[in-house]
Length: 81
Image 1 (cartoon, rainbow, N blue to C red):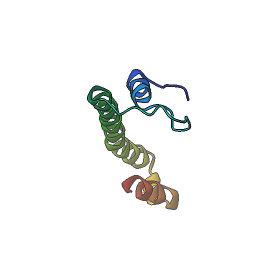
Image 2 (spheres, rainbow, N blue to C red; image 1 turned 180 degrees about the horizontal axis):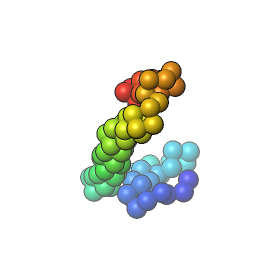
Image 3 (tube, rainbow, N blue to C red; image 1 turned 120 degrees about the vertical axis):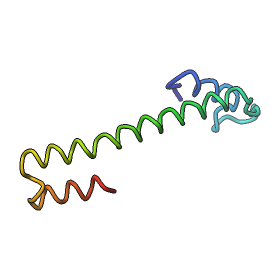
């Protein structure tokens, strides 16, 4: 399994690979903290992109007059989910 980033690699080093027999070490607090910080940062980035994408979609559809078409309504409905 290839490590994607340093935090993920640190977590793997402390946990060990699941398929290995024997040598399973406990997760250290520092590795867990780094892993969770990475996950929280990624979630914040995803949320910020989603929050800015919907108004952008609505503006594009409104400017082009597509918000009143069936496809435009579907696009807006999917964006609300």
